[in-house]
Length: 155
Image 1: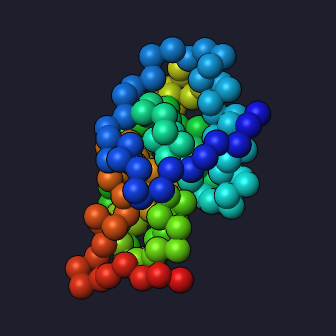
Image 2: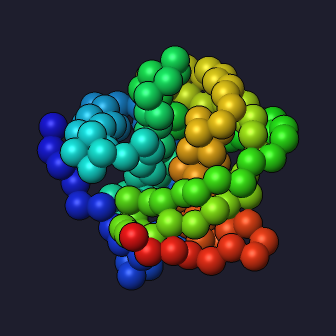
Image 3: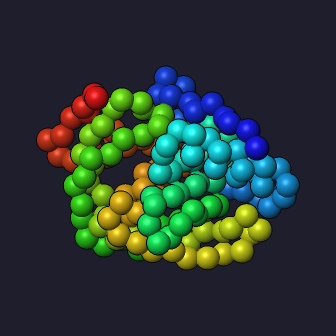
């Protein structure tokens, strides 16, 4: 596998809408492996393919909880409940943080690397990460989801 360059906020690709994956083949599996290596090296909890310049609906999530490492392809949030206002950052916006308003609980459906559909659900950081990464697929970054009265902070 290989490390990929994480695109930063100056790159217009981050504002584009990603396309669905239709081929669940060796090329996709290679992309998933590269994304995993890149995510681990960057010490992140989530990565969307668009963040490495690939406009496909592919997301990786690993918040270090019971869900383990998740590959979510063509994912869609199907349920949201509650509310949380917590600090968020992004590998594509290094050094920037801000409190966002996100659901406390989410349930989503997605496909795995072989095209099989599955569902996953969770609360807290997991829910926040799912929303954050799925937002990337539609060309949005966390700074667009800041809680009322909040500003972007720099570390």
